[in-house]
Image (cartoon, rainbow, N blue to C red):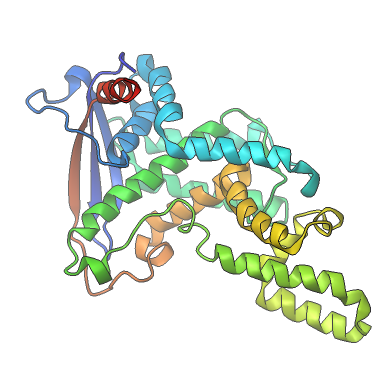
Length: 334
């Protein structure tokens, strides 16, 4: 990372209950003001990760591989992805295999959208909203939701760019929430937080419990009168549909052999592994982040945010130096 020059990036946001980013700009090296020293990154690196991923997309082409190395080494979600992907491969015997492939030609619209969003001097985030329709189209094409879909495969290495875009929007949101929490009067009651799992799966434990209910029903329904079993199946599908979807994505013959406790633990973990270890999980997270930019963060992620507190339109500028991370890594190794 020593080849990457210090850089700055800027965020322009419009007024809302929680300010909504609209434009991002990136400048590096001699292109930006030299009269300010880069500051130390935030504790969880939200600022330098946002800038680094933005640099991958918008920075000098000569530094693209260096920014790629930075993302792979420092973004904790990459490690989450690698671990989840590995576990899913290890547990493949438990997952139904019906591959649904998205081929290279279907990604052309994605890259047209990325090109259109790049205005040269800034990135227009609202142009990315076209990706929502594209993801919806993919979901409709296979006539199955992205949620707990373990079969969807993007047969193109450029899926990484969609992954990095998802990470960029996550870290960008964390910066906005950091600013929001500075404006509330009582942090104990009014502050909100960012979480890599519960933001996307807020009912993870409830879904596991619902899945267990459906699992027990599957084991017992053959012992019930036919009409009673059918009626119960209809009600279960109506009221705990996410738990049903999760169980039905797995091979029933295999999970029947698991103990109740092992299955409970497995259902908790596999939801996270779907979220971070599958291509459908990437598209699901990307759509959530884009919908939040379109509708408002308070309507997608933070329903508890007070509608009486309106953030004004804002503008943030960050100065970063990735060489600081190299020195940190060296000092930790000593």
